[in-house]
Length: 374
Ligand code: GMT
Image 1 (cartoon, protein in one colour):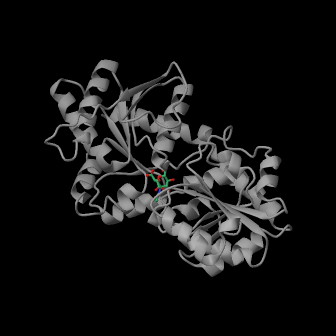
Image 2: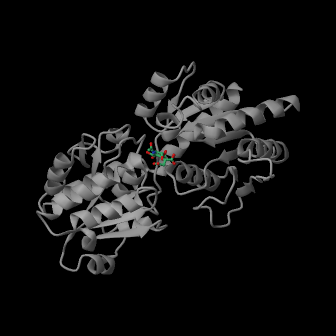
Image 3: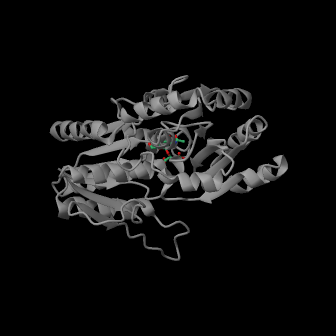
């Protein structure tokens, strides 16, 4: 198949899933055309089946905000037409699904039918999408896509509950490339961070409010009263300043390191003992899956689709959002030498269920079904 993939080419989970999906499909022999405003972060190599089309956003003194959706729709029209695509797969409803709808209508006037599959990733529904300034467009775009997928049962349920949806939504979960995300031998790295055998906790995110990053620091603060430990924070974002202030207030700065937007996150995960994901909202929790693939158990909140991934008492623990005390108690339990190996083993076993090789065929089948029905 010839497939156009539209996504946010940034560090966010939706962009990562879209890029890895395209790369995986290209390996299977499909021709993949990425249509984005910047080269996706993980698309930094040559492959004969991968193409990249940059959206050209022209600015003009009259525009306070350049009309990105229109430039994107125009680019989709030209790529579909000249590359003879079979299907467009847009990731994140806003504004990709509505831009795809416009492209589809323009192409129809030229006698070209292009099926559109929209994948809902999370905040496009649970946060931004619900806002009255976007809701009508999101509802319309979902109802007028030829296929719609959500990354968890919970996200599907939430979409049906909050929007007037008159069509099926198929659940296809996030996935992981186990060849890249696996425990690597990085003992020297562990020794440099934890010279006295301290336990190592890790959190990765875009440090937005929904991630409740302050809870990560508070759990660490409580845990450190009981055992020597270090915390690595991977990522960056709007909450960074307030996190640093909290570290100073609690006197934990010496044991916490901010690593920034690290590309090779699997190297850090390889030496971690525990991953923390206390999010307020989380449709799936790709970062937790990446940790589990590197044999790291997870203490998470019960937000959104996380419990569909992190099995309570098996791969880690699922606690109520904001319950610092419970998270600390459960972290202490996992980190005991007699418990840790089993949790690590279970985390890896669970991650294997989301192996890219198992999930990709679901997308392929869904594309075929959508093309046949259009
Ligand atoms: O987590 C974020 O803030 C980034 C966000 C995105 O849209 O890029 O991630 C969402 O999509 C990921 C891939 O499907 C999911 O694994 C994340 O759970 C989801 N984030 C939220 O729902 C907050």
